[in-house]
Image 1 (cartoon, rainbow, N blue to C red):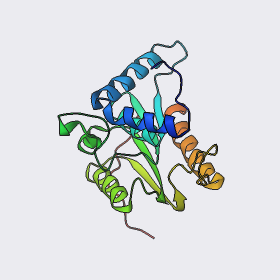
Image 2 (image 1 turned 90 degrees about the horizontal axis):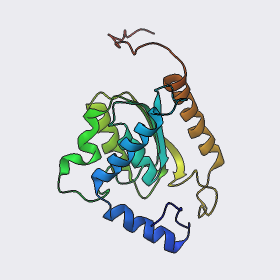
Image 3 (image 1 turned 30 degrees about the vertical axis):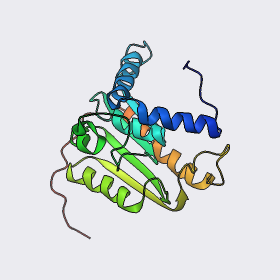
Amino acid sequence: MGPEALEYDTEGTDLGNKYKEDKPLESYDEDNKLTIDYLLGLKTCTGKIGATGMCLGGHVAFRAAFDKRVGAVVTFFGTDIHSSTLGTTSNSQLHSLNRIPEIEAELLVIFGTKDPHVPPEGRDLIRSKLRQSNIEFSFLEVAGAQHAFVRDEFSKGRFDPAVTSIGLNMLLELFNRRLKLDLGPKGEAGKVENVC
């Protein structure tokens, strides 16, 4: 395969899903590492790196958070995180759920409640694993939104411009706060007082 994008049709979708399953899991991390290395080598790079993606790309962005150089990640309806079914590997410890404790980036995880690829129990599992590891994250489940609600072209009736706008505005807030503004080092949370 060359660098050309696959067509968004039945043949291209089937081929993409085959590659997704057959690609070694470790190679996704290698792709992320090489991309981050390249970006940090640019004269225009501030050294602040973020990642975002949708569907498979949402999972790949999630895995980018395992790299300590990444400060913020937004994942839209990331598939295969909950099921540990991305790629091939003989080492179960490499799956995303098992690597969550490595994350130092702030995460924004977005799903629709009608996403058949990541059912409620899958979303609950991801959220609970993030919470158990004390990861700094926001988790948004939008009522009535489906999988791929961002995609307008050939969306199969799933495109939701209002939900897309909310997600993109949240992405901009996180990326501006963590990657653009210089707010100094992240402080300790300390004890939160229970006051009204």
